[in-house]
Amino acid sequence: MDCTAGVAGDMLLAALLDAGAALHTVTGAVASLEVPGLAVRTERARRGGLACLRVEVERPAVPDRSRHLSDVLALLAAAPLEPAAARYARRVFELLAAAEATAHGTTPEQVHFHEVGAYDALADVVGCAAALAELGLLAPRAVVTCSALAAGHGQVTGAHGTMPVPVPAVLDIAARRGLALAAGELPGERTTPTGAALVAALAEPGPVPAMTVRAVGVGGGRRDCSARPNITRVVLGRAVAAASEAAAHGEVVVVESTVDDLDPRLWPSVLEAVRAAGAWDCWTTGTGGRHGRPGRLLTALCAAEVRPAGADALLRHTTTRGVRWSVQERTTLPRRSTTVQVGPPGREQQVPVKIAEVPGGELTVQPELAEAERAARALGWPVRQVCAAAVSGYLRERPARAVPRQPPGPG
Image (tube, rainbow, N blue to C red):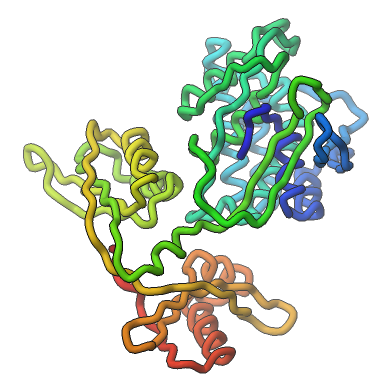
């Protein structure tokens, strides 16, 4: 996510649509809120001479009202959104509520949402959630990074009167999630609270990952400024790590930390954060901590350039006070991926499979488990049936010496 010129909800939504998310997916998600008259439409435009997509929210004729967090969450709970999209939208509004509560000296439950709980924000957040889910960016193994957010300068007038830019909620969100703000010389409000929360609920700060670019989406803001194109960009691609792993022999950085005072319920989110930072794999092992306390040893494998981001994620998401790392040698199998159709005619689901070649030329085939689980939900099948069908489908298409096999352990 390139937010160096700023980010707002409509700009990010437009960028995701321009990058390939289907408009009908977004409009269907917004319609599921069952707010009569609330809809989105798009148009092609230019900002600073650059082509972009614009999103306009069509509002109901009746005046909007301020809402509490519970009102917004009730709307989301009643909407038939995809689970990953619903969880993401909830995180965005909870982050907004916490930021507004800090800014105004109250609690998240007592916050009166004005701009961020209005029709525009509801459409932007739910639309972005649906678009992100469709593009695969809410999947567990997706890596999403963001640039520094353009802060802007000056003043802005809202429901709470005139406030300095960046507004307090944007500063609070950046502080909570460790996002960088770029001052620059861009005047006016460049990053809105909704835009900051949409980015912060998903992305980790960092540069563009090493990847093969597949799509670029450009979303334009309402204003057309001469200083710099008023756009947010989304760059989608596939990690190039698989290509580097094709070498038979190479180095891998092992990042570790032992933690014995973390709430056990938080470990899944810790592993997700470390993977999101760019680690190829990570896992925990039970161990004994200081004074005999039970603990967990977290181990992550990554490239050398990813090590600082992985260590930072571990420090931010656990209670550890230190991280150690070492460089080790490893041997890897040449590997590639393809997609197999699974399911009856008219209901086929795409399931990616990984193919690796072992010494002697024999191939092993293993479906991507997260995608197999998604396909199983869509088909109403057991996951094991989807996995078996994906392997069988690949073998039918390429009857080589491929054999299904459990993947080797990490490392």
